[in-house]
Length: 147
Image (cartoon, rainbow, N blue to C red; front, side):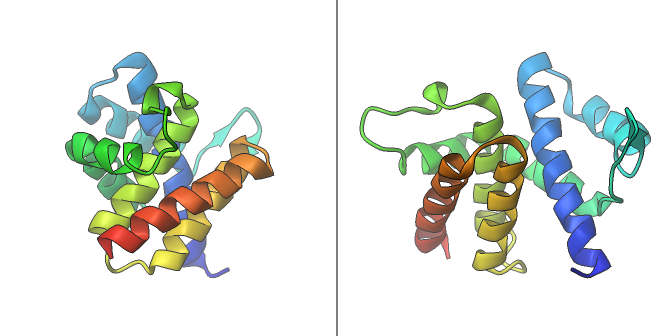
């Protein structure tokens, strides 16, 4: 994997974490971005080195999901099985799906397959194979609609 791919992967993981924090703690967007820029991206936390993230890409995903949350949530909700809603999903899972859906909607510079693969990888950081397959199927369905 080249350096740009690694920095984008790190940006995606950080975006999911930032949006999770925003969701849980209601951190205002500007403060959240500043906190991640100053203290998280490319830093060592609890002896774990965080890869250098592509800051502009991180900012775009976080700001984009925040700005288009209603549209994105409607898109994701529309692909959930009958009887399921976003409220029933794990909070981290919701952020993974939001970030992936945002990239599929707004980042036509990133190939659909790359977006899906990247967020399946993010899902593997938090969940088992079953949930990763769920991310794959849902983002693939969204990709077919928006691309």
